[in-house]
Image (cartoon, rainbow, N blue to C red; front, top):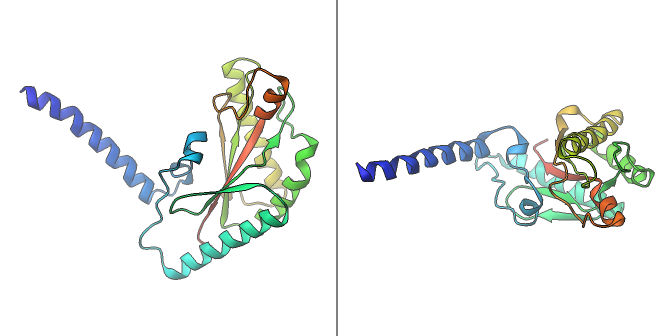
Length: 202
């Protein structure tokens, strides 16, 4: 009986893990395989390409991936290729905001306009929009604000005819700071939206 009581929790945990893994392999929701936070971006251990992907589809994915990297390089947008089997690109240039605002700072408009135009013509490239805040205000306010910031970028992309199904938004509140929140410069750094691209089949 003692061994049975030890075995049952392990069995339940295993079932839960198998369900999550199946979802990762077969689910259509790209947020299941996208990094969940800063550590996941830097140390990814996810992103499994389906084994049965036809060669023609893989060729199209690689083509879109190459075009995306060329675009980022031509427009001097800093980026990082995320290691792993999935073709994902994390943009190091972030979109800035003023305190307690979901309006994009003017300095971010030019490259966002170019990016929106590019994505509108490459619907097989999915963009994950991650909103963040500094520590000014309450947790609840910052959670809502980070989501509104992500949604404001979604609206900007949609206005340039980027397909709705190619955009995913998430809000992280103040929980993943890029810089210190102890200085005004650091807080300005944390009022941001980050972009992650996932290259799909055409």
